[in-house]
Image (cartoon, rainbow, N blue to C red):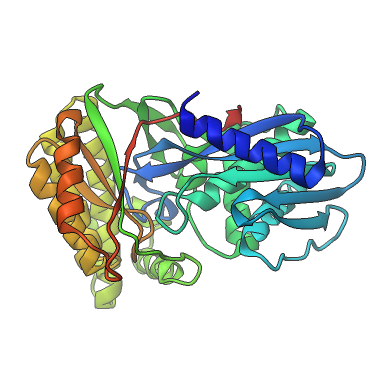
Length: 388
C-alpha cells in the first residue's frame, strides 16, 4: 500500500472510530476518473475513453439492526448526517455532500433493494470541483458499501453504476451521463475503457507501459449543477429531435450537415462537437492501442479545439494551460481539457521521460485567474470499485 493510500485508509478508520465507536465491518473504495477523450458524448449515447485513477473515495461501514443511516464525512470536519431508510419520500439533506449519500440510498431502495441501516464514515482524496468525478466516486463507493454489507451479489458493477447515475440525475439534480459512474465501477488497472454509452459495452484499451497520464488542476472550480451543463444537454437533445434521431450518436458529420436546415446556429455547433467527438474517440482508442501517440495527440488537440469553439465550455486560462503542455510534449502525445467544462482539469498523455519537463513548464508559465499555480498529478490507470 502506498503512503497516500495508507494515510487515506487511516483517516477513514479514525473518523469511523470517532463518530461511531469501535471498528467497521469492512472498508470499500471507488476511484475517480479522468477522461482521455470523448467529452459530452456520454449522454448522447456516444463513445468515451476514460480511465480510473489512483484518487479514491473510501467508505468504512458497519451494519445496524434498524433502518437508520448515520454517515460521517472526514473531509468536512467530521460532519454527521442521519436519515431513516423508512422515510418515504426520503428528504434531501442540508449539506451537498450528504445529498449524494442520500441519493444513492434512495436509488437503491427505489430499485427494490431492501436496505438495512448502517454506520458509515467517508474520506476521499479525489480533488473536488476539478472534473475528476469526485461525486460519482462518492456515490459508487456508498453503493458498494451497501452492496458489500448486505451481500447483494446480483448487483453487478454496471447495475451499480446505473443506480449511481440515477441518484445524480433524479435526486441530486445534475443530468449527467453514465461515463463517470461506469468507469468508477468497472475500471481496469493499466487500461482505459472504450465505453459505448448506449449498449454499455466496455472494451479495455491498454496504455503503453512508458506512457504517463498527467492531470493538471487549473485551480478554477466549477459546479455542474449550477453551470451550463444542463443547457448543453438540452441543446443536444434539440438537435437530435430536429434531425429525427434518437440521439446524436446516430449521426455522422455529413448527415448532420444535410439535415441542418432550420437548426439554430448555436445548437448546430453543439451537435457538431458531439458528432465529431464520437469519431475522434473511436480513432483515439485505435491509435492508443497501437501505441501511436502522435495520432493520439492530434486527436486530443482537435477535441480541445472543438470544446472551445463549438461547445464553448473551455476558458482562456484552460486554453493557455493546454497550449503550455502541448508545446512541451510536441508530437509524442497531447493535452486537452477534461471534464464537464468551465474550469477543472487538463489531461495529458506523454512519455514518462517528458513528465518533469511538462511539470516544470506548467509551474513556470501558468497561473490561474486568481494567481494560483496549477497542481500536477502523475497518475496510473487503476481498478474499479471494490473492497479494500
